[in-house]
Length: 493
Length: 136
Figure 1 (cartoon, helix red, strand yellow):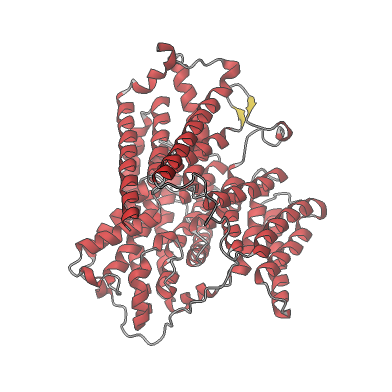
Figure 2: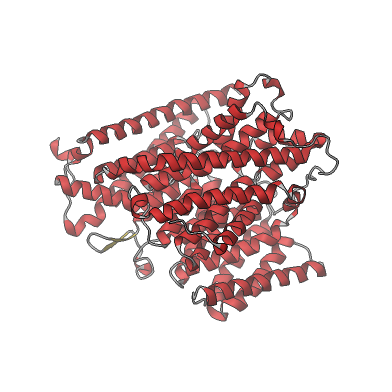
């Protein structure tokens, strides 16, 4: 049932190491790593690909702690609070201790979320199997409102981005009547099937980032990393004494936020940090190098990994930008992710769980023991890596339909679109998720209406549908309230 | 009123139903965003659009690297079709390296060329021979 051998082990290890490098370099993220390595998975079957991609995911999330602790710059958004306590520890000469505490917490968070993934996905999928086209339509609508609702402080922009993504996905031929729409006539031949997923997502997440970095000149970080050498205090596993509740609480927060579509890593890290602070016996110590803060941040961000896979594998809805890219891997191999995924592909499902476990263990092994050398990662010159990223993007886009120049232009186009989105403060994740789910949204909408003879009341006629409508309104109401609160706070400040 | 809650699905036109709805929603959202902006501007007694104190690019942004990236990217794609993937990649990855490294030291130039040749050949080999993707 579980596919595992030397090849899979090597692929997972390569994935984890490259992921850690991407995670550790500010400006490069796990999402970017998965996006540019996605084309490489053509060569393998889906199970082997999963070892590579999940390795990149786990490594990419974990690597962020290295620069957070050593130079107080989070390598990924999800380690935003790691530096709060990690960096003061490093300054005190406890760099190795801080890194090791972070690494152990990451492992705990990863394994915890794996358990949640394993236990919660099958029942959720079993529930979703009963969904008709109406509920499938509503659940996508719900996912999109949640994503938009949680784009902090600019809900309307988030919803707008989501629908814009849907519109982008609709360009091309409509499967029902084989007619072309939303395509300029000069691109008729190239866009029969619309924009290809791969160049779109590589452009949005990799090329846009290259443009951002080019704009700021790719300067080397001026901050010198704190030296690791003479240790003021050695790491002991007893450092975790009294941290079990914190570990479980923070991992749960991370996993739960991972399950919610579109919330993102920085929110998980911030929320569990603030919870650790309010539950702490000595809250004033947090921010000065307390073990608690470090544990909270790192266990929650690795908790995300398994959590984000829950909605992906049970409902076919990606929980964050990284899993949105991951969905690409399944699409490329022609595997449908959705309620039927686990029952139809038990082998892939078991292998994914196992791969996630292996990747977490490899992450621990390659970070925990050679911890003194791992500090060198942040010295890797980014200006040598970006050209390599660019050529990989181009090759990946080109290969997506086995050789089509139009896809390479698509890559550049969406790179520029992604760059403009960042500039205008439009969130990219809702756009991508809208793009990925857009075709399904249309299909279920049309199918529902065909069933009802065009009567829109079909969307309000089934009890499960009412529940989902309820959830949609709750998420919108919450977002409205949260938006107001955020605005009031900014006025006060 | 009952007709309002009906959407006619005619087979030959069914490809246009959903795009129209989505465009409609986008227009409504755009209007809402505009109204929000106008209300905010009125409240704060500011003009609706003020370009003052607003800049698109960062202060002192790296013009050479930014526009250089876009121009090189476009030329790379064009030349890939003309002179083939491997040659074009070796040339352009070297140029990207030189652009980003921003020094003319001999050592840096040599490193750029080595990085470029190695990555181009590896990718060309992996995709061309291992994966059987025909590169231009």
